[in-house]
Length: 178
Image (cartoon, rainbow, N blue to C red; front, top):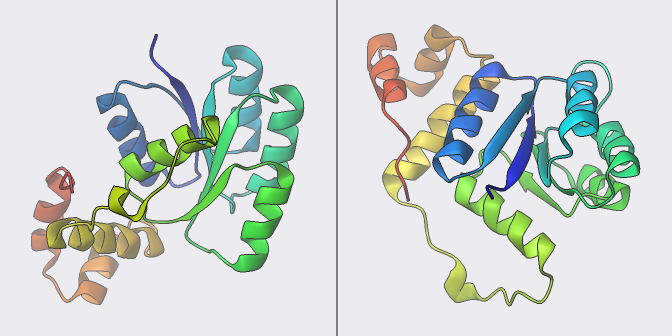
């Protein structure tokens, strides 16, 4: 049976892309843009795992973590945010999240973190870490700048020093695997 995962992020572009990447890896994916949608999905479908953004309109990701775990204590949650700090990481983990990752993060890293959360005996060694390729780093940087520009291609292209059409061509390609 395919693992089930809930993705909660108010940024449509990021949420949809992340959802497609998890589906490619064999997961059954549920998407939510805010606290209310996420709680409805948790009540109805009880996903095994969740990736939660901290900053959302309305109730925050921290509130979602507490309420989700009160409803479904076995769910493994990873917090994913572009606005990370030690204080928020500590709050997220104290609220019950298994881990805290900064955006952008590779889907395989998120899955690995969720798997490690499920089996704490899993030995994490430095050999497990693979340095991302230059193409992957470029993709993540472009995605991050686009996210910061709230999906505005023209503004992101200006910041990146690219022509708007060049940026659009790069975005039409799928992200590099490594």
